[in-house]
View 1 (tube, rainbow, N blue to C red):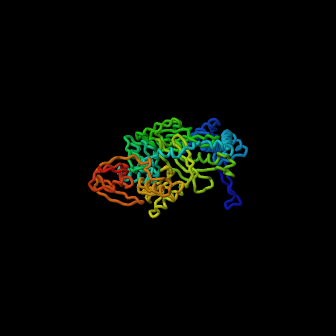
View 2: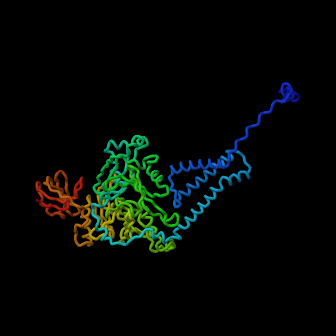
View 3: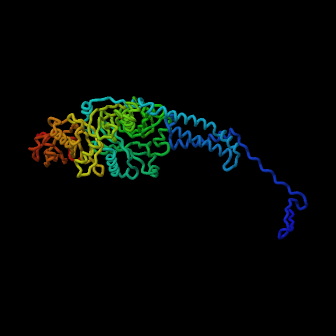
Length: 580
């Protein structure tokens, strides 16, 4: 290369030459290697494989049901289509490369036309599905989802005995379970009680069952091979908590990871089924199961949610099977959730006189009250709630009981106080203690529809019980035991001329006989009745003089025969007494 300096520059003009030292031209650079062109077919296949991997990852994490009646499926497919189109355009043109407008438009057509057409069809199907599912066109179908049978309150409710009444709500039951766990050194450091327990009928007795979760991911790593070693049973009458140890641990639960996570286990075995709820139950032998309610949409594509059956998963082995509603085993207590039942009745209440009526005149429109409770009856669990008008007044026009396994529904046309008014009356009767009332149950006492509820302290422990007359909710009775509360309530019925005389109703609990020698006697007057407290074999028994007049002449050292409630702790109620 020769450099010459010329005028106009401090050193003269500068000229560069590509000639060699001998005056010959320098050799030219070799041309760049042409970019390898990938065939369109290969590019499309690669894009589809990458999209498939993305779909599997999303499916693994979000678990959408592959079902046209599931709105989440449409979102899933639209997301995959968008991913595929963006991926295809990036790989076709490169990131940041400039293209002419016509080339870009043609590329979009090549890459996105087919996905866009499919998405457009799905969006159209989604919109049409919503339209044909709308209550404005299908009001009659919505009103027929839950068919209630008007029934006789006295005949149905009279069969329920006090040893079937659940006296604990979910919060109180879970507090008792947590306290019990705190007593178990081998479990409390590794596991925690799940925040929700489930009411079931276990061996014809109302209980709540609560499963355990791993404390954290490190405790999961430590214990996952052996599984969760126990669950808890909370007796809703005696308030006793039993820890049920398992020879083989629970290996499938909501606190597991990967494929033993119960929702993922269900989804990968049943990819097209839609699940509404997965709850924990035990069979009559005490074996733990997961009961997953399977739903469908009966009206159009997206309207009229209803249960078609349930998938039962063995919590230990993971084995599963689908049952239709008619085939569900009788030990299963909860296939239809309370939310579905309430929603279906509200459809009936609003639309049984037509959609236009539900908007304007609202003639005959009714709705469920704000709460609900459960009651054990005929080896099943029934959900109970009051029915009121849509006007928002503070009174009920009736009640419904619905079987959570079969969806058998009974309606009782009984007008009276709304549940929250009754709860306020019960709390007001013991306002000095600042107790909170549970949502009430509906019972039949001496032919009178009666609200029964438990009164809890600030620690959510049941301290007292209350009964409120439905039709005259100023009649309120309370007691530290169910028997005491019942006796006080019957006295008030007599005082208000609602019954002729107090009689011991057929709903007294099954009694347990006891014979022993009276070691000590104490007495007190409750609601005008004298109660004698007898110390026998180290336990105190409460007998009212109204039930056993002989108790007034008892002496220490007398040998007696009692019929008792059989409770294990506290002051035990006795219903009859005989001096031997």
